[in-house]
Length: 328
Length: 225
Image (cartoon, rainbow over all chains, first blue to last red):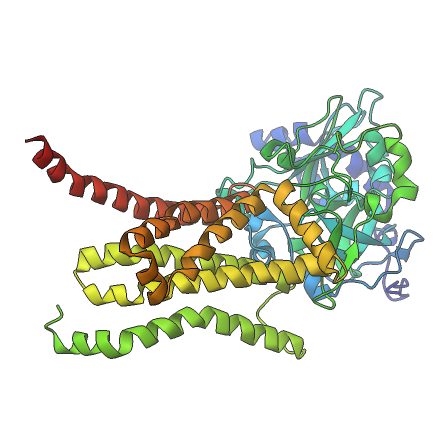
């Protein structure tokens, strides 16, 4: 196990940040839009300075190791070696080559990082990442990752359940779907200068999928802060779906009533559906989905692909009665 | 140009061996990398060596095929006739890389996926050809390439006669189009690679089309008068 116990010489975030200050900050961040305007006009220099001071008061690690606790959600399969997990990536915002993200993603500024929360929810606005993800209650989940390109990895993620994060924004009952967007910066993300896809990258989940116990927001892997090429500083992990659903470097979350148009679905609707559940029986025009190459071990290693990537016990009930070939 | 003695010596003695080794180089590199991999050493095939192998062999086959189609235009533009001596060598190299590409797909994908069962692999091949348009296209291109490779020897050329041989070898144009389409349908999203190959192929095909039209024009006039 890679679990790391809290070390006595490390102070926890909660110990550092006085609770009053922390609650104040949340209130200020909630009114972030109005405050930014005030800052622009220079009318409210004092509260602007206060915000700056408080932004420094509650911090998150931007590199190095994270504190976390292990969970029962982990699989026992051999973990994909760290160099493969961080050297073989699909992150087209940094180029279409598998080694492009490792080469170019360091250009991305991940600190500070904010997420726009929009749509049908009680709390919306711009929030700092450290106010969206509670870095004092991180957990580890060792999940299988199945890419639609018929290869797979096993990755020890560090993060928080997506349901915890989304609930905090009080989604309304009309919010039947949640849409995610990857950050877009043409200077820092060199791949977005080419129209490989319609940028920014968009993904989405049905609300019950998003609230499923397996849906996870990762901020780290192998016990360390997420490397940029893996979607720093925060990414989705939905292990029963093909890898492209697990959107990286999220900067916008929107609660919506209609099914979002996701990037790959828009690019090639026949190939990539909204659900994109791992399904060995659904023929794909590019790759056979019946089996997969296992990355990082014996070069000839393959395994048979399982329905829902082997997570049927936790997720199959959400699709009861649905034709999963039609709704691929 | 042939009057230049240095160039004449080069054409006569060095052109063919140099072409041979240049064409063999990608295959030698790939074999060397697999040697490193299988003996547990650092290699240049990345974290998905089988995928790298497929891409490398496919790219090499298409690029060498494009080079083979560029030989005649180069001869016309430079008036350096000896370049025609290596045209067959280049075309055959494209065939060998395409064959390796297909063998790698059969062996490293289909056979492994079928647990080394040959009938399982053949069933997988049939499924792939039927379900995946890029494999249908690629297989068609390769099937058209086979008769060209088989009739590339002098004896076959004589047996067929120049006219029929040339007619048969015009298959290289549609098969090159199929090969580039195979590449284009294989990649995800909008990628540059297949468009570069396609653009070069379009230029080479346009050269022939307009060349044929230019040659036919005076004849048409002559027969009309």
